[in-house]
Amino acid sequence: MISTSPRLFTTGTIRESGVAIFIGTSGVYALVDEDEPNHVAATRFWAGIVENDEDLITTNYVVLETSALLQRRLGMRQVRRYQTAVVPDLRLEWIERAVHDFAVAQWLAADRRQLSLVDCVSFEVMRRLGLTSVFAFDADFRVQGFECFP
Picture 1 (tube, rainbow, N blue to C red):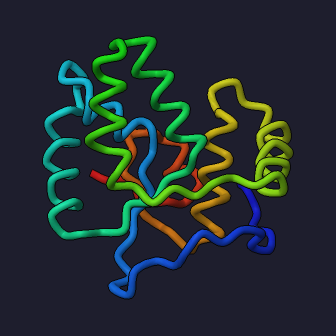
Picture 2 (cartoon, rainbow, N blue to C red):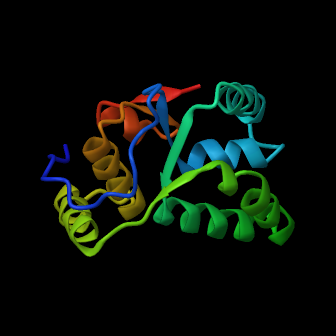
């Protein structure tokens, strides 16, 4: 498991409602790819969280990873759709060097081929922000103790 270290960045606070969810690559990919088995569930869940005006938090690493995945698998049309219809609704946490270095150390220590650096950065950001929920279909978030939605 990734441990928590002192918070080393600030980009704002979670809205007073206290309702916040981390947005992961697998959730967004399912939202955008109509052929993805989880597309319908992702679409319904996304509509609900946007309608409820929840604080949608992600990192610049997730935006990069998602954009690259969409480009490679689905093409630039879907990247544009993501960048214009999803990214504007997100609060981005920009990763500083200390957070990156901490996540790299955790990633290398885990020594697992299927665990990504972006995942490790996401786990650390979620812990530092006190987030427990994630829009994702990635089992690694569950393993780390987070609640995956939908």
